[in-house]
Image (tube, rainbow, N blue to C red):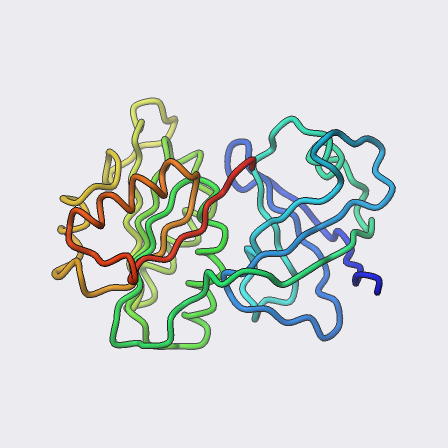
Length: 240
């Protein structure tokens, strides 16, 4: 059975070295916020050992009319081709996959600990929750070196200002290297930072997304704070 096709509609930078790609949504295609898709280049102009297929989080929320994939632009054949692909080019779409989705019990807050490109499934989840007015209390801790590296920072900051159920805690680990003034949190996310925003660290369900080393470190912080592994969900990004 052949895979459905999608067409590239638009692309633009969303942070230094990070680009968002917009695709049309095939008829009848449905997914849950936080899931991912495999995109396959058809007859690419070049390939390498990593092949013509990549998995990307569905950065778009399900209510949005287009699909969005967001990626760091590593120097690989796939990403070189994708970056220069003519608008309107078709790709094969294999989706949806994954279970990194929002829990149902609104009595328990959702806390996201994410960094860098790990924000991609989080954007989908928090925008869909706001759109559906689910009633979840959501806090997103979002770590980057500089504001310039933080995809969707302005969009999430606006959501923080307009939605009483949502709190963004953005932190920069190297703000002194930024071209922009930064007045928010600084340093890595740790137990002390979490405690400033969460009264009972064992109450929420936690979602960890980002590079494997960060996910491991954040799990350690939570375990030290007494959070049970059953209340921790993870999405590790490798080779992005």
